[in-house]
View 1 (cartoon, rainbow, N blue to C red):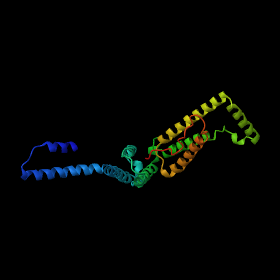
View 2 (view 1 turned 90 degrees about the vertical axis):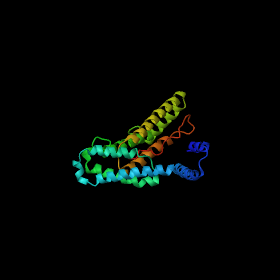
View 3 (view 1 turned 120 degrees about the vertical axis):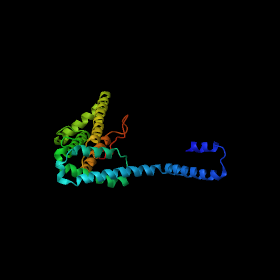
View 4 (view 1 turned 45 degrees about the vertical axis):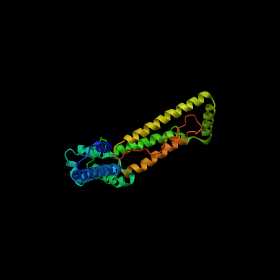
Length: 246
Protein backbone atom coordinates (compact mmCIF):
# COMPACT_ATOMS: atom_id res chain seq x y z
CA UNK A 1 0.00 0.00 0.00
CA UNK A 2 2.84 2.37 0.78
CA UNK A 3 4.35 1.49 -2.57
CA UNK A 4 1.11 2.44 -4.28
CA UNK A 5 1.02 5.72 -2.38
CA UNK A 6 4.56 6.51 -3.52
CA UNK A 7 3.66 5.63 -7.10
CA UNK A 8 0.59 7.90 -6.91
CA UNK A 9 2.85 10.88 -6.22
CA UNK A 10 4.93 10.21 -9.34
CA UNK A 11 1.95 10.39 -11.69
CA UNK A 12 1.55 13.64 -13.60
CA UNK A 13 -1.31 16.13 -13.30
CA UNK A 14 -4.92 15.20 -13.95
CA UNK A 15 -7.72 17.44 -15.13
CA UNK A 16 -9.17 19.25 -12.10
CA UNK A 17 -12.72 18.04 -12.78
CA UNK A 18 -11.47 14.44 -12.37
CA UNK A 19 -8.58 14.71 -9.91
CA UNK A 20 -10.66 15.16 -6.74
CA UNK A 21 -12.98 12.28 -7.61
CA UNK A 22 -10.07 9.90 -8.34
CA UNK A 23 -8.17 11.02 -5.23
CA UNK A 24 -11.15 10.41 -2.95
CA UNK A 25 -11.59 6.94 -4.42
CA UNK A 26 -7.90 6.13 -3.88
CA UNK A 27 -7.83 7.54 -0.33
CA UNK A 28 -10.98 5.65 0.70
CA UNK A 29 -9.52 2.36 -0.50
CA UNK A 30 -6.19 3.08 1.22
CA UNK A 31 -7.94 3.88 4.50
CA UNK A 32 -9.74 0.54 4.35
CA UNK A 33 -6.47 -1.29 3.76
CA UNK A 34 -4.72 0.37 6.69
CA UNK A 35 -7.74 -0.07 8.95
CA UNK A 36 -7.81 -3.76 8.14
CA UNK A 37 -4.09 -4.01 8.83
CA UNK A 38 -4.41 -2.28 12.21
CA UNK A 39 -7.16 -4.69 13.24
CA UNK A 40 -5.60 -7.80 11.69
CA UNK A 41 -5.22 -9.63 15.03
CA UNK A 42 -8.84 -9.08 16.01
CA UNK A 43 -10.03 -10.17 12.57
CA UNK A 44 -7.88 -13.30 12.64
CA UNK A 45 -9.27 -14.15 16.08
CA UNK A 46 -12.83 -13.64 14.85
CA UNK A 47 -12.17 -16.01 11.95
CA UNK A 48 -10.79 -18.69 14.29
CA UNK A 49 -13.79 -18.31 16.60
CA UNK A 50 -16.12 -18.60 13.64
CA UNK A 51 -14.44 -21.81 12.43
CA UNK A 52 -14.65 -23.37 15.89
CA UNK A 53 -18.30 -22.38 16.28
CA UNK A 54 -19.12 -24.06 12.97
CA UNK A 55 -17.35 -27.26 14.08
CA UNK A 56 -19.16 -27.17 17.44
CA UNK A 57 -22.50 -26.84 15.68
CA UNK A 58 -21.69 -29.76 13.40
CA UNK A 59 -20.47 -32.12 16.11
CA UNK A 60 -23.38 -31.20 18.40
CA UNK A 61 -25.81 -32.07 15.61
CA UNK A 62 -24.08 -35.43 15.29
CA UNK A 63 -24.18 -36.03 19.05
CA UNK A 64 -27.90 -35.22 19.11
CA UNK A 65 -28.58 -38.47 17.26
CA UNK A 66 -27.87 -40.35 20.47
CA UNK A 67 -28.41 -44.10 20.30
CA UNK A 68 -28.80 -44.00 16.51
CA UNK A 69 -25.09 -43.28 16.23
CA UNK A 70 -24.29 -46.96 16.65
CA UNK A 71 -25.76 -47.46 13.17
CA UNK A 72 -24.13 -44.37 11.66
CA UNK A 73 -22.10 -45.19 8.57
CA UNK A 74 -18.56 -43.84 8.61
CA UNK A 75 -18.94 -42.44 12.14
CA UNK A 76 -15.27 -42.85 13.03
CA UNK A 77 -14.12 -41.00 9.90
CA UNK A 78 -16.63 -38.18 10.49
CA UNK A 79 -15.53 -37.67 14.07
CA UNK A 80 -11.86 -37.82 13.13
CA UNK A 81 -12.42 -35.21 10.44
CA UNK A 82 -14.19 -32.89 12.88
CA UNK A 83 -11.48 -33.37 15.49
CA UNK A 84 -8.73 -32.65 12.96
CA UNK A 85 -10.55 -29.51 11.86
CA UNK A 86 -10.85 -28.45 15.49
CA UNK A 87 -7.14 -28.96 16.16
CA UNK A 88 -6.19 -27.03 13.03
CA UNK A 89 -8.61 -24.14 13.62
CA UNK A 90 -6.00 -22.08 15.45
CA UNK A 91 -5.53 -21.24 19.11
CA UNK A 92 -7.90 -19.03 21.06
CA UNK A 93 -7.33 -17.06 24.27
CA UNK A 94 -8.13 -19.24 27.27
CA UNK A 95 -11.09 -17.15 28.42
CA UNK A 96 -12.83 -16.82 25.06
CA UNK A 97 -12.02 -20.39 24.00
CA UNK A 98 -13.12 -22.14 27.18
CA UNK A 99 -16.83 -22.24 26.38
CA UNK A 100 -16.23 -23.51 22.84
CA UNK A 101 -13.83 -26.16 24.10
CA UNK A 102 -16.38 -27.31 26.66
CA UNK A 103 -19.04 -27.55 23.96
CA UNK A 104 -16.80 -29.55 21.65
CA UNK A 105 -15.57 -31.96 24.31
CA UNK A 106 -19.05 -32.51 25.71
CA UNK A 107 -20.39 -33.40 22.27
CA UNK A 108 -17.39 -35.59 21.47
CA UNK A 109 -17.74 -37.39 24.79
CA UNK A 110 -21.44 -38.01 24.14
CA UNK A 111 -20.68 -39.49 20.70
CA UNK A 112 -18.00 -41.81 22.05
CA UNK A 113 -20.27 -42.90 24.91
CA UNK A 114 -23.15 -43.57 22.51
CA UNK A 115 -21.09 -45.94 20.35
CA UNK A 116 -17.99 -47.08 22.27
CA UNK A 117 -17.41 -50.10 20.02
CA UNK A 118 -16.84 -47.76 17.06
CA UNK A 119 -13.89 -46.12 18.78
CA UNK A 120 -12.33 -49.10 20.53
CA UNK A 121 -8.59 -49.47 19.86
CA UNK A 122 -8.41 -45.97 18.33
CA UNK A 123 -7.14 -42.65 19.63
CA UNK A 124 -10.71 -42.04 20.83
CA UNK A 125 -10.88 -45.12 23.06
CA UNK A 126 -11.52 -43.26 26.32
CA UNK A 127 -11.01 -46.21 28.68
CA UNK A 128 -7.69 -47.19 27.10
CA UNK A 129 -6.52 -43.57 27.02
CA UNK A 130 -7.39 -43.03 30.65
CA UNK A 131 -5.45 -46.14 31.59
CA UNK A 132 -2.43 -44.81 29.68
CA UNK A 133 -2.57 -41.62 31.72
CA UNK A 134 -2.81 -43.60 34.94
CA UNK A 135 0.22 -45.69 33.99
CA UNK A 136 2.22 -42.56 33.19
CA UNK A 137 1.30 -41.15 36.59
CA UNK A 138 2.46 -44.35 38.28
CA UNK A 139 5.68 -44.34 36.27
CA UNK A 140 6.69 -40.82 37.33
CA UNK A 141 5.53 -41.37 40.91
CA UNK A 142 7.91 -44.32 41.22
CA UNK A 143 10.75 -42.24 39.83
CA UNK A 144 9.85 -39.42 42.23
CA UNK A 145 9.94 -41.65 45.30
CA UNK A 146 13.22 -43.26 44.21
CA UNK A 147 12.33 -46.22 46.41
CA UNK A 148 12.58 -49.87 45.34
CA UNK A 149 9.46 -51.99 45.47
CA UNK A 150 8.75 -53.05 49.01
CA UNK A 151 10.89 -50.29 50.54
CA UNK A 152 7.93 -49.10 52.58
CA UNK A 153 8.10 -52.27 54.67
CA UNK A 154 11.77 -51.80 55.62
CA UNK A 155 12.56 -51.19 59.30
CA UNK A 156 13.86 -47.77 60.42
CA UNK A 157 17.25 -49.36 61.16
CA UNK A 158 17.48 -50.87 57.68
CA UNK A 159 16.40 -47.59 56.11
CA UNK A 160 19.02 -45.67 58.07
CA UNK A 161 21.72 -48.16 57.09
CA UNK A 162 20.74 -47.83 53.45
CA UNK A 163 20.88 -44.05 53.63
CA UNK A 164 24.31 -44.22 55.29
CA UNK A 165 25.64 -46.48 52.53
CA UNK A 166 24.36 -44.07 49.88
CA UNK A 167 25.94 -41.12 51.68
CA UNK A 168 29.30 -42.88 51.93
CA UNK A 169 29.15 -43.88 48.28
CA UNK A 170 28.35 -40.31 47.28
CA UNK A 171 31.57 -39.11 48.97
CA UNK A 172 33.68 -40.91 46.38
CA UNK A 173 34.25 -39.78 42.83
CA UNK A 174 32.77 -42.98 41.50
CA UNK A 175 29.74 -42.53 43.75
CA UNK A 176 29.10 -39.05 42.43
CA UNK A 177 29.40 -40.26 38.85
CA UNK A 178 26.97 -43.10 39.50
CA UNK A 179 24.55 -40.75 41.20
CA UNK A 180 24.71 -38.33 38.27
CA UNK A 181 24.14 -41.16 35.81
CA UNK A 182 21.15 -42.41 37.77
CA UNK A 183 19.70 -38.92 37.84
CA UNK A 184 20.16 -38.42 34.11
CA UNK A 185 18.56 -41.77 33.30
CA UNK A 186 15.61 -40.98 35.55
CA UNK A 187 15.27 -37.52 34.03
CA UNK A 188 15.15 -39.00 30.53
CA UNK A 189 12.36 -41.29 31.71
CA UNK A 190 10.39 -38.38 33.17
CA UNK A 191 10.80 -36.32 30.00
CA UNK A 192 9.73 -39.33 27.98
CA UNK A 193 6.63 -39.67 30.16
CA UNK A 194 5.83 -35.98 29.63
CA UNK A 195 6.13 -36.40 25.87
CA UNK A 196 3.98 -39.55 25.98
CA UNK A 197 1.37 -37.71 28.06
CA UNK A 198 0.90 -35.12 25.35
CA UNK A 199 0.37 -37.86 22.76
CA UNK A 200 -2.42 -39.71 24.57
CA UNK A 201 -5.76 -39.55 22.75
CA UNK A 202 -9.06 -38.08 23.84
CA UNK A 203 -10.18 -38.25 27.46
CA UNK A 204 -13.05 -36.05 28.74
CA UNK A 205 -11.91 -33.10 30.83
CA UNK A 206 -13.70 -34.37 33.95
CA UNK A 207 -11.54 -37.50 33.90
CA UNK A 208 -8.36 -35.73 32.77
CA UNK A 209 -8.26 -32.98 35.41
CA UNK A 210 -7.47 -35.13 38.48
CA UNK A 211 -4.94 -37.20 36.53
CA UNK A 212 -3.27 -34.05 35.21
CA UNK A 213 -2.94 -32.68 38.74
CA UNK A 214 -1.54 -36.01 39.93
CA UNK A 215 0.99 -36.11 37.08
CA UNK A 216 2.08 -32.52 37.78
CA UNK A 217 2.66 -33.28 41.44
CA UNK A 218 4.79 -36.32 40.59
CA UNK A 219 6.92 -34.31 38.13
CA UNK A 220 7.38 -31.49 40.62
CA UNK A 221 8.31 -33.95 43.35
CA UNK A 222 10.87 -35.60 41.08
CA UNK A 223 12.60 -32.35 40.10
CA UNK A 224 12.34 -31.06 43.67
CA UNK A 225 14.74 -33.79 44.76
CA UNK A 226 17.53 -32.39 42.59
CA UNK A 227 20.02 -30.48 44.72
CA UNK A 228 20.18 -26.87 43.41
CA UNK A 229 23.96 -26.87 43.91
CA UNK A 230 24.48 -29.96 41.78
CA UNK A 231 26.26 -29.26 38.46
CA UNK A 232 23.81 -28.96 35.60
CA UNK A 233 20.75 -29.23 37.85
CA UNK A 234 17.73 -28.30 35.77
CA UNK A 235 14.93 -26.12 36.97
CA UNK A 236 12.72 -29.02 36.05
CA UNK A 237 9.74 -28.98 33.72
CA UNK A 238 7.50 -30.08 36.55
CA UNK A 239 4.70 -27.81 35.46
CA UNK A 240 1.65 -28.46 33.40
CA UNK A 241 1.97 -31.52 31.14
CA UNK A 242 0.30 -29.52 28.34
CA UNK A 243 -1.84 -32.20 26.91
CA UNK A 244 -3.24 -30.95 23.60
CA UNK A 245 -6.80 -29.88 23.72
CA UNK A 246 -9.21 -31.98 21.74
